[in-house]
Length: 553
Image (cartoon, rainbow, N blue to C red; front, top):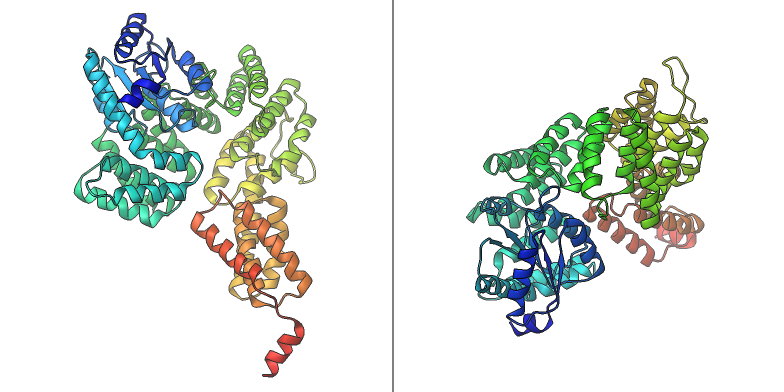
């Protein structure tokens, strides 16, 4: 306990001055005098952003708006709270035990009011020891070294009389999923569940099945988790995300509604649900949900400029021009505070809505094939174009050379990798029938090119496959085409049929393609491609003379 007493810096977050003072006095009795206080969620965020604390004692109920559990989830997931910090939830609600029992992101411990100073200190001591024991794992995670964290967890689990075994298993299984070591994660979850039905292990197993493409099994596990624990918000969210990725947008909205009935002020879920409502054409509901996200997370790093832009779009559609203008200005303010490429694109879209000029969207065109232009921004782009481009009619002829079809083509060619993704983009354009058809047709063209390339590979026409796939993959940045182009390049290089110059050029091309796939495909596939490329780079290509001699022998 000496380390805790002599060095700890503590933050007390509670809206009641008497509680803050009482906790400060309790800590002073054991020599902890480096104590800051916060009286609201917003002030707590600011404190945590500007300083690191060893211990946070946080009230669960701050009155209206976000509660302590929702705040904890937000800042844990944003990385603003170090893993080594101890978080205690202070609550007067005995029902909180049901909440924390199935929380994916839970506090290190909680205390129900009233409690004694001895109870606080004793529980802090236990939590502190656990944090110190798990520190080797935390250090690797914070150094972005997941494999090192996995090894550290396994070493700790190999010790006799393992302390904190449940925490170690939970950390290890999460790391295995994040590192795409899915078979290992599945085996671990199944071992855990064979001895005890633990909610987080069941959710983890569902995530594994989902990532492995076994949607039916994942759905069954998530549905049963929700039946067993009606407050299990993380199971609801995983199910909603799975439905969204599968293009089941209406079903995803139903699940988000249930989830938000339990945690009405979770910024992440409000943003997802609000953006989904916009895609479904329900601008009134989108405005309601997104305005709540902005009100709860006005100064939160979890609140994106794109979310505020989506709110402005919803307000504009609802003819609430005053709110629309206010939110468009907020987008610009967000960029001044956090000047990222993604936020700048949102700001350009906001400026285009302000001006109402179609040509202002041209400023974003060069960014549309960049790394920072993601699916969420593509959806906002389509919605923005709908607001400011002249109305289309069913008899017009789409022209890839002219806006808005030039921009819709770039988006469809880049992002349509499955029918589900195509469906999401089509749903976003549902108010323009001709746009929806154009996106569908353009996406189908990309699918046809990919299928043709795969067929060429299967017929061992590898040079033809490379000639077809590589240029389109490079120009569109479509991850499905990029994967096929990388496979074709590697397979052709392995044949040894390429001349020296072609081989050198294609090795560089393959390297670039594999690099672009990072974060878009399973790590196991990426590692396999990289290993094949490394073998090719390290091997000396044969010369034509050597090939002739070999043939003669």
